Image (cartoon, rainbow over all chains, first blue to last red; front, top):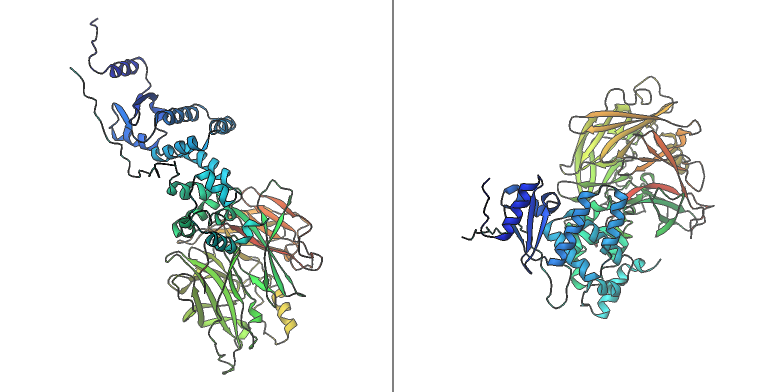
Length: 171
Length: 439
């Protein structure tokens, strides 16, 4: 049998090798900010609506560049999507999510922005619920700290605002 | 030879801003669209003093709509509204309770106390907002100004409407002897909440409205801040003291003796008639030979005696009645064995679907009052209405599963001496943070 010679992009070589050996379709996602590459199953990658559209439109034949998402966030996202594609037990997923989202605010925000950008509904729902829980019942000062917001109201304006719905501060 | 790797730009149009470079900030659009919609109304209102721009962002109609829509998905997004009136102090109390099914005994929370003279009527809610108004029979008095409020229990805000322009009676010219029944609805077309006042001349036989009717219409949006008075033809004569139910941008009344539903379209500001399907109320509505207390006794003449008013209201049975179930209109009726609900599943083509369930023998439905429903199509029945009990005996019925469960509230309603006043359930409402206009 004639040995096939692969030339050019070595990554292309290995991807085509994988393609030939299994029926699963694989995609390569490359974060353009830090040039990290991730080889993932298509079924996992299409949890992102954005990637799904690209695949369906037929323009995802090679490496998919993903801007604005850093490598470590991408890694976490793929881990999440993998688990949610493999596992169907609600309870197990809930436990996984709770553990998975046990992150510092910076990492949470990166995840949230990326999930929003890539349109991964399940991940966005989980992260936003977590952030909502973090600010429930907190004072405005505490909320500013958690969400990293600068205070741009004067003391009078704050007082005025509070007086309007003063019952929210009681009970 | 190198193979070219084709680069394609991702087809994304909603690139979110990364915020300021020095501090990693959350993009505001995600905050509002996905995080704040998951909070309770109370928490959202507490966001106002956090950032200047949020004060107005929270009032943004798009955000308000999104928040309302998500209220149905949140476990704490819907609540029950109860009310009671203390004759001695002349105060009306508004109390909320949770719809959490897991609790055996539901806690209650006093929302607000309104200084009023006589007891006020509270209508069914429209998107979480209620109309609180003087009861029709008390609008006769010449030296009184009607109380008409739009109440939002989620924000605890009231909008007090100005009085309807003076309408002289046709029977006794020069006197202000009109009865006004107030109703509340949402005009889907113009996305406006409207209060409708139906004027009934005191001389009208049976206190029914027929022929041409004078209506006062007050829209919350548009900044008009005044009533518009219009004259509209009514296709059937009806008793304006029956409760109105708003669905699909129209207010509906059940006209029992004509076996129809009268609908007032809030957009077109016209009446039309919806026929009841065959079989609806066959045993229970007048128009059948029955006539034994089921159905409208509205042919009675109104007497001037004050006590007679209460009697009149009680004599007219509430059954069969119109209720809202989910987003549909339905007619609820009962006989010795079962409760029947006829749902108007196809509004345009007037197609009805019947569901029924058996009920326990110890329910005396003659004294029962339907009080609203949840968005999951369960409806509430108060089993001890007008029997003098202070705490309402409420059951929540699920027609689809033919099941019901009892709803218990904690015994003590704080700040209210429940031994002297009687608390009633108004209905179930979603949280809505819509600000009420200032007048």
